[in-house]
Amino acid sequence: MSTFQNTTASSIVFLLTGVPGLEALHTWISIPFCFLYATALSGNSLILFAIISQPSLHEPMYYFLSMLSTTDLGLSISTMVTMLGIFWFNAREISFNACLSQMFFIKLFTVMESSVLLAMAYDRYVAISNPLRYATILTDSRIAQIGVAIVIRGTVTLTPMVALLKRLTFCSSHVLHHSYCFHPDVMKLSCTDTRINNVVGLTAMISTVGVDSILILLSYVLIIRTVLSIASPEERKKSFSTCISHIGAVAVFYIPLISLSFVHRFGKRAPPYVHTMIANTYLLIPPVMNPIIYSVKTKQIRKAVIKVLQSKEI
Image (tube, rainbow, N blue to C red; front, side, top):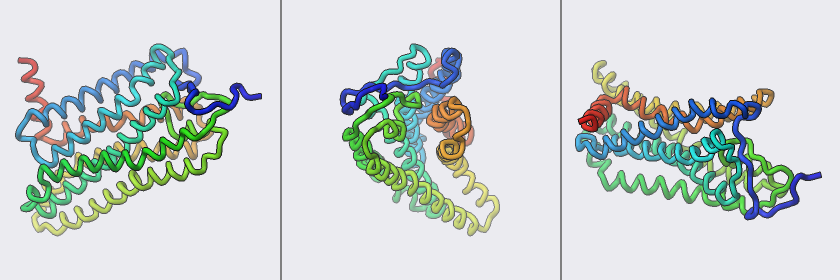
């Protein structure tokens, strides 16, 4: 017999899940997550402030980096409240509309991050293949247009996916399997046919993150071809070294995403807490690692960040 009667979407309260089987350790588990959130928020805020306050960083490459930092801040904040709420206060309840809002923003910032990484790949291609026209191709107004297009693209693509969940009815358990609202989780609890939702959701992700990954790969094929055509080994090394930070950012975005997909598909025998821990951390890895990668690998960012920190000490 069902635990709950069939329920319309608007009246539902879902129950989020912490780490199954390790509920007694939630307070201790929260410590590394607090550290990761603090690192992500402070690191991205610092880079954003450095780019805004330092005129020497008012260049296309750093404007795109500021977009990446903004996206990472949004992604961190989207999951922080529910995740830490569960670990600290066992606050598991979330209304259907709040769940949809969180889901939308998590997906939006994920798609935006993918789009920004694509824009950064294009920036590197233009800088290496056509350095004399770099400033005239990527003007301030064009970069602003790219930023607006990234937001509009994500919003238009994801709104139908989230809105279609409102047509579903739910029965049986209302327990979600993550510390945040995850699109497949919500669909699994529905009593209604979710084929349309599956198709729309898959189409949205393929047309954004999937297409972006192919275009980023194509950009690097063109970049490598351009670099190899440079006669001087020193110049080749110098040109390609400007891409190292971006390659790192692409890796920390796509590798956790692919790993999570493999775990969900092939790790069915793994303990439930393994799935939950990987799902909780995969959204945090890019916001935590991107400021570290750019601070370590990009001399101008490193100098600007040190300058900002020194000025605050004074």
